[in-house]
Length: 256
Image (cartoon, rainbow, N blue to C red; front, side, top):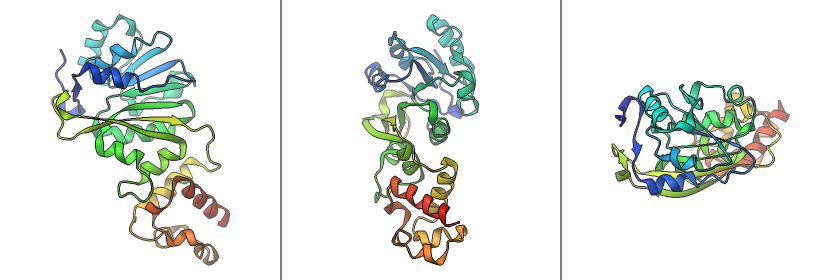
């Protein structure tokens, strides 16, 4: 047994049926490697290992969990990455091969995990897993919704998102104080013709003053008077779809 550690944000899933459902959220297309983040005591790992045509790796920072997994799953020999997911170089470890990522993610770093996936999107065609319900809703929110924000825009620019199902807090040890939600992201075939870093900076700048119109929140971009008259600049950031944010970024880049 492994004792859940508060400082690592560990809440171990105890319901095997839910673990099986999460394992089956991956459609398993276009890649041969699965990476599970934060396997803990391996309740999800067991079902992922049943995908015989896929190679499973796990990344786990907790030494006690690593020791438990090593003893429990002989199939994971040399496939346990004992490190912080946020610090590893996915391209280097997997030699640029495409990977599917899943897990029951620590809620205290779940947003950072998503930004890491976005940084690695060229070789992460599919991603699924469990988040705090509010974060899961934010990822999949549509424009005009009060939960729609930076993460919604950036994720939905590069991935099709699906909110799959809710998970009650009583199926964890210890139970978290929030409900959970499971989502799936499937990478889009074509990426927009704009730098991801440029788009990310623009979206963050816009949402930093989300109640203001874009004409005011994007003043730091020194927009030309002619460009500022475009109808899109009279809107607030939550009113724009991800595709409109891409168009906005292209307009500003062409104006400079």
